Image 1: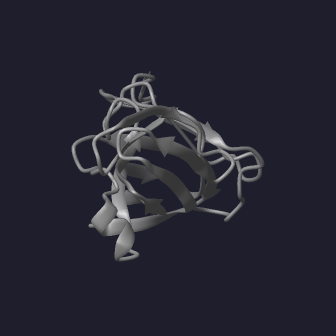
Image 2 (image 1 turned 45 degrees about the vertical axis):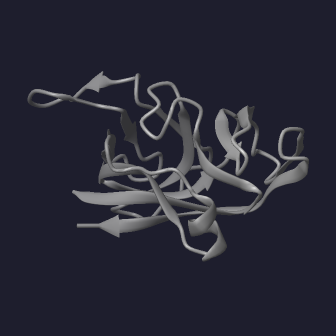
Image 3 (image 1 turned 30 degrees about the horizontal axis):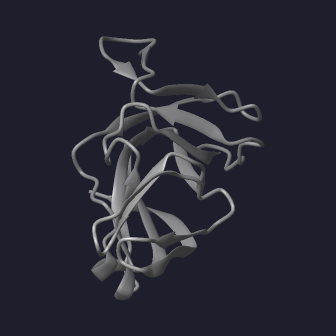
Length: 166
């Protein structure tokens, strides 16, 4: 078992607190990424979708997981389980420093997550307090105007990485 922390970063102009619509532990947010088989190294052809609300029972023993998938190349089965309570929104300060913010922890057995895909369903707020909801980051950027703060707001250069966590 290896734990992978999804870390996100972006350039936030006049914005802060970038996170999924329902917060970092949003039960309905779809995490899309490819998985790499731990045995043969085969990379999945399509993105895998994992949602906190969608669980399946483990084939052996008690408990549940969020994904059970078989490698199409070697046939090995692996699981991905989401671990809540470790994510934080990407703040303006973290963005300014060029650092990454932890979003979600994945307990992976037999697979390694790679290539996170940004989609819709994000929220962010301006430094003046205006909230922007259901932000779509699939194009890699977001631009709007904050009427209250009388300034342009923008998200650009979105990036993600998976870090191994002990």
